[in-house]
Length: 457
Image (tube, rainbow, N blue to C red):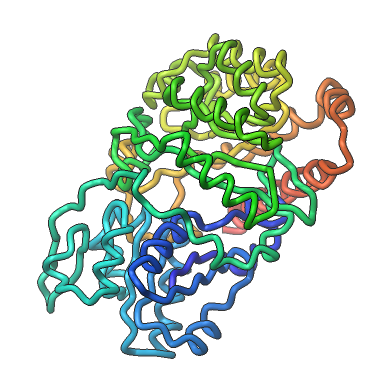
């Protein structure tokens, strides 16, 4: 059984906000296991699966859980619950948090072993019953001794079997969409990756702990094979490329755009990119069906961008957003407030950039230092054993929560933004606007509650 944990009480709000998505990483693991003769079950708490009842019914021999830092406490709960049902089951942890903190994660969770890096071959060898000492990428306690096995080389991603989507109940993912890339309530998205690894060194990012710094690319043929299969199995032509940076290599993007056009499918697609795109590339993407691009803008201060090694310039961010608007591609911006060293002046520059950019969608978060990221070195007193939800994230000043709300309010409550929404208005996207407004109210309520608690203390 392969498990994706979630905050159970937040599953429905996730669906409303368009953050429900298929567990593609687990589906890659499942495909390799099935190819080697193993029976696999997916438990996805994000769509309401109940792990306790599924464990009792299926009685799995091996339980694999994918772990992000903000869900680590939930993972500990799952392990305690599962152990009470089956004390002999082997529990293995993987994912970004585990690759950053393999030993501490094993100590704090009670899992039998942790997997560092890409786990497709590692879990196959585990399921086959291989001697743990021989399994590359595996880390575990042998008595009181901690065993760090040899690292596992990154796989050729063109040789991996296609994600085992047939193991999911498609109906649980109906209405799944990306904010800014709405699909109908009886439709869904086909999410897929075309690359692994990223050569950039943004100090807040930790994905290199799993996928490394060297970018590896799938062939356009491989990508189209997955799209063709997805269209048949998931009955959708809505495609979301989930790569951190889909546009790492122009030739890679070009080959996929050409393959989409040659396929004859009327594909509507979106992706995530750096705000450094040329007009020729944007035009090519639009012609092949690109509907929306999400950009990790992060800050409107060049000083802060340079400090976090973002390697983007404010003028090129503005130009890229203008070109997308010119060619009819919707844009979504991701902003972080409260980055280390950020001043009021830096924040005001971010406000100016956001309000002057004519973004279609904006997501604002308060900075969180993640285990495995370079930026964590700026927090010498950071304690990774702190329990995650209540006090894991760092906010150097409570004012950043207020500024998160302020930026969202300034962006959405503008006459020009209202006109832009009306110009592009579609009934299918009305729920997005409504739920984004509700999300704003939720963040504002949380801020007010935190202020009351601080006053009482």
